[in-house]
Image 1 (cartoon, rainbow, N blue to C red):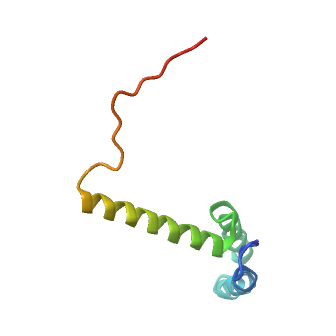
Image 2: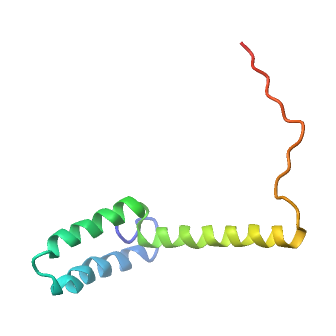
Length: 91
């Protein structure tokens, strides 16, 4: 779950993260369990498709935004222009 179920790298990255986080938290022994739980909850909330899936989604989002900005800069015109749009209300 942490690495990403439907990815090739997820099963390798997930266990590394699950082992590395508690080791890094050795400096705060009294709060280790609490901090570890909070980190796991944040992974589940903000990266439901795992670390690899979240990274893929972030990279594709950055790529799409960069492409849209590049298109806008090249053409110096709006990406979408609508005129004469109406909506009829039917009972």
